[in-house]
Length: 453
Image: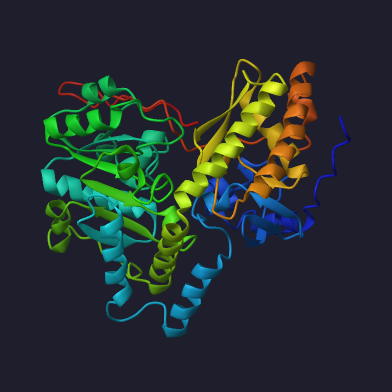
């Protein structure tokens, strides 16, 4: 083994963290970006700027970034065509007193790209879009129960299924239940004549079994419930038309955000006109910033670039290069049973087998060693168009050394002893283990959701 490089200094990051302590609850606006998801004492904490797929922290350290803003940077940081569109619109204004033409232009574009997008509405966050979709489904069906599978944001209707139910009325909690991904039997056990909708992420890191999404669609139709796809991650990444186009299944409603505007805050609710028309008078879903023009301009420019360069195909090619390279390295090091790179190539996750060692300690050690080598990684590879082959090769070289360190630590039974900081904490965002039955007549209480992980 060659000697490991020195850790990058994080003096200024730590100073800023001290200023935030006691001032900002949980220290961060986005949990996945916060200190608990990185090896504390080693990892950078605050980033100053980005260019392409690289970021610089407040101490001047440079990293190849695989978090990419937790998904929105689909093209890359400071992407010229998008930034120029923002600058052009900024010269004319940001938020106006009447509607802006970009609202129409983007809606027409989305109608052409997205399956079943007969009508379109805008929001700022994914949680707003999913919450509006659920409200719309309840209004359309006249029912109240919701079945979900995946992560859908922080609003009352959903968050209690992850165990963080403080502040959510019990009556609201009792209306939302879960089913297991790729398990159509669990959906059939949970759905009933009072179910307004089934909302799910069509894919996280596990591919749907052949026919699964089609069966979900059929079960919804059988019971008169609406099908909602939460496409925050799959939209514009798997294909321009998202999971609906990629897997050949249309939902009644679909929600998008993240990749659509390359980092600008924009979410979209789209779907069948028969349902969406309820937003005209029956269902209230309006906001001051819904038509904010910088984000709309960014989205149009982002879609232009995605079409011009066939970005989903490029992400899949480069992601496959990374995924296959990681598999080969793990096999060479004898770690193929302990470490796997799973998911669609455009967005993969390193999975650690608990039979080999504590997964959180394994993840922490790999993260620590990647940081040493200039790679910012929190478990996932959220590829952008700016991740070229050269960056993938550089990343694989860093992984070869980091995974060798992991193998040595496992062989020595000394995972914790190799860490130079506090290990990462469990990720709150849950992508599996969903299967809670709804309350039936005569039940004494709601079956609690399984703990978040």
